[in-house]
Length: 215
Image (cartoon, rainbow, N blue to C red; front, side, top):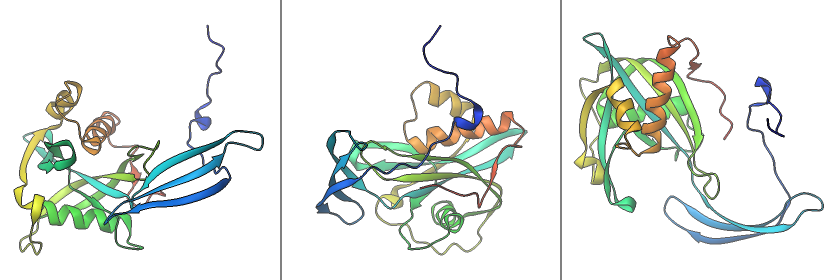
């Protein structure tokens, strides 16, 4: 019924591709991100196109999961996000702005700093690009289980983090909020759906915390 072929399972994999860059321009440099433009030739006989993009160091996020009264619950943080002028329910997250830092170590640090929690069991839930059409930011979302409270937290929360609100929510209720459009942070949406999918597979198909990351 279609002129398009059926993909084989092994074909469903993003792949690296780099077309020739004929010119590069640095437009603007900020504290975290920078803006660039490049003239790219799309193949040997293809057109030359100009593409602007924002360079970003990338980030990690963590879904903290506990079992309470037989139900899976995730810990979410309500954080003010000025660019969209909203308070968004999110998961602990932070930039990969320390050169050479291990991704898992970064996630463990963010969980501790933003929730005063640590975890004994870590897995990778999902990797994604925030907006690959014009933004280099890549994100990895971890699942953290077997949680424990850090008795003497050392991190002082400042700026927007000083306004944090925390709350546990049943995973099923979080899924409902996603489908009803009540949650819009991408790491929250993907983290909730990926956690639900992993639960449906009895947690058997989760990747290890040190799984390779193509970013």
